[in-house]
Image 1 (tube, rainbow, N blue to C red):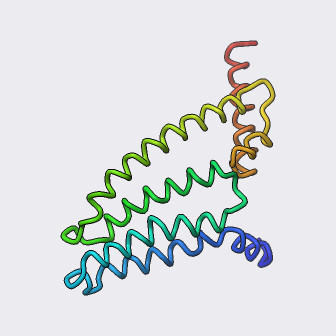
Image 2 (cartoon, rainbow, N blue to C red):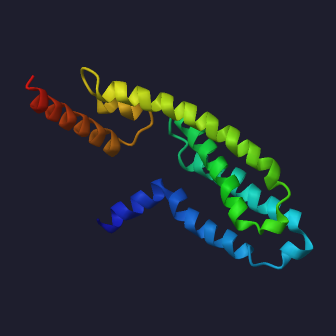
Image 3 (cartoon, rainbow, N blue to C red):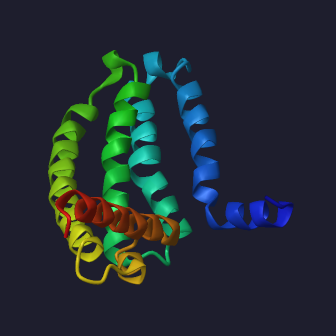
Length: 166
C-alpha cells in the first residue's frame, strides 16, 4: 500500500483509528480515584462516552451509509457500549448500569430480528437466479464483501452441480 492510499483509507475510516485511543483512555479512567468520591459521575461519564458519544461519532464518520444500516450499527454500538461500561466501571460503582442492562437486552433482541431479516434478504440476493453485488451494496455491505459473497455463492452452486450431476 502506498502512503496516499493509507492516508485516504484513514480519512474515510477515522472512527476505527479513534476507537483504540478512546478505549485506552476509558480503561485508564478505571484506575482513577474518582470511583471512591463520586462513583455515579464516573459511571455517567463512561456510559455517555460509549453509549452516546461513540455511536454519534460513528454516524458522523459513516453518514453516507444507508440509514437503516447506520441505525442498526449505532444500536449495536449502544448495546456494546453498555456491556463495555460494565467492564470499565468497578462493580461496586454500578448504579445506572443496572437500568442499562435491560435496555441492552431489548436492543439485542431488536438487532437479532433485523439482522435475521437482513441475512434472509442477502441469501435471496446471493443465491437467487442472478446474484448481484450491486444489490448487496445497496443493502449497506462493503463492495469487497459483496463481491466475495457472490463469488462464494457461485462456488457453492458449482459444488452442488458437481455433487448432484445437474
